[in-house]
Image 1 (cartoon, rainbow, N blue to C red):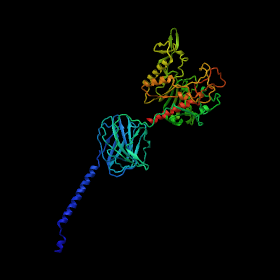
Image 2 (image 1 turned 90 degrees about the horizontal axis):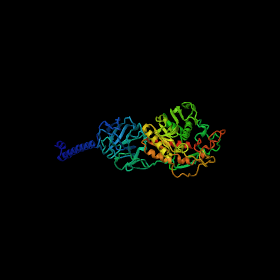
Image 3 (image 1 turned 180 degrees about the horizontal axis):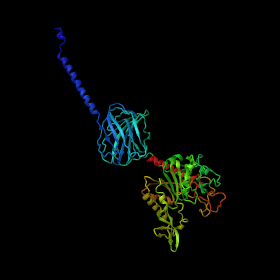
Image 4 (image 1 turned 120 degrees about the vertical axis):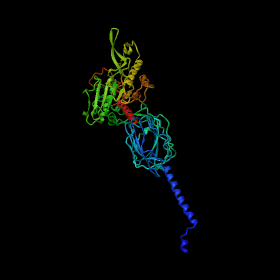
Length: 568
């Protein structure tokens, strides 16, 4: 009887045992359902189309975790034919990370491949939320082979929300975990940081305060934190580290600009550096400049003042050349005033630096007026040498020096349009018509995707006591002026700006007028010829000694080329 009693089961114990088993099974089922619903299932292959001809592929898988460290959250908005396949209304309440290895190549013709995995998370550490907007292709100059490895995960509440399936806009948010921190090459000029998305502190951790808001704007929102610098406003600063070359180290300075060779003894005119008032411009770096024009042609077109700048550029670039024999004129010409066209080859960089004389940029010809055949200026016809320029990669134009009443014969029977020779036309009207002809030619024949176009503004003269042919002089000047009498831009500069506003092709003005206006000390004066030659020709207060002021013009050109390269 005792044994039977020990093996018997009371009803109360049986009920407790049954309830425990049932509760455990229910809890297990509830937990399984929660796990399934908390882990989103993504398609194994997802296509993002970044413009035509691109088919980036991302492989997605799922995992689970509780922490995310060193992550970048990037929101990208693109225009053009993006996400043509749909993929709209994608949202999730957990997180998305880049797992294993992801490659981003934002250039044209490249694929974007990424292995994505999704996990749940509760914490976000060292996260950066970036909202990137771009037109057409994304960062065409900047980020290639952008990779991240061994990432953790984060919680980005609704980080992917309502991805529009239209061809005109894709707004996506991608959380990129990074331990190698190889994102330093990201072009921040194309990035707008959403300040409402994160808080940072000194130990490097940030906490997300809200979900990512996708921008609905169709145009790029440009950052206003960095305003363009007006490099034409500033002052000359004495700098003993200048000049960047001498008449000994540069063999390309012709007689008219080689003031030291011609007997000028003072040297301070070579040691002034232009300092803009609102920013700094880089010191000219010959190696960097040669790399900017590697495999390209840099062409100067204009009058003898542009030849002045062209010779300065040759001398500046020679500072990076180890073997001078690797630089030569294509036809073996020596630089003189008599020959107008030159092409210097820099063999080590496979580039050319060229000059073509064109006093007016339009055609100088002849026409019959009455019984006489007179020299005329065809202000409706481009210079016949223009075919040599249109294939150039960088062109620096100028014209102004010859647009004077004396050199244009006071406009009497000189300006020609079609078969008509104007009995009289004022120089300003003729100058505007000529620039319109030049602008129309550029719009028709120059490809802005290939060629960068600059126009150097008029360079001032400093004749005192008369003009160049009437006893004008500047010999006594040895220091820059403290101030200039000019209060308004020259009329030619105003006309130039009016013409450029009507053109389709972008043209950058090298505005050197006001900064050069201070440099009364920079002209050759009586040192524009060899000491033994006659001085009956008067003083030269229009051109510039080399080394000297044109070196600054080329520093500005270097600045703009660098800026254009970094901004693309």
